[in-house]
Length: 172
Image (cartoon, rainbow, N blue to C red):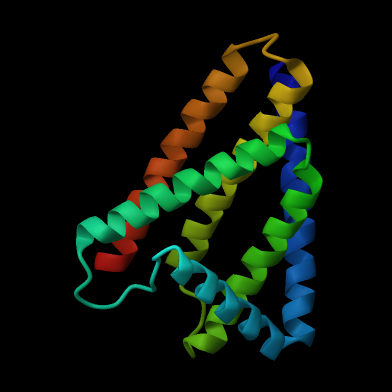
């Protein structure tokens, strides 16, 4: 059963990489459109009360936004995996992560910091594990309960590490 999970997880990672390559190509040919796309994403975030970090914001507010935003996102990835949408979700996630990261270089007029790359890698790892776990449960119907429990535990540990690492990046 664990082998089955690793096959699903590997497929999600391969399609994530494909999406990232497509995002890289899109950014290369459409830089202005990429920045426009990300600015529209920021507008969408503001509807939910999420704002870009500014000096003096409450640490509790920042923690809660990061924690609950990522919990909701991870639950969404799990649900989409359960609905058997692993391939399109992986491709779209890779595409938008690449466009988001590369657009930041233009928006902030600076090279991509290593910490941001590490944080994005951590977040995409636990999200791809969540979508893979959803697909695994859909395919195997809890024939082996240990694999999903171990997967959820690893997801939660990487999730917590990413939340605190993001706080570290903000307040260092």
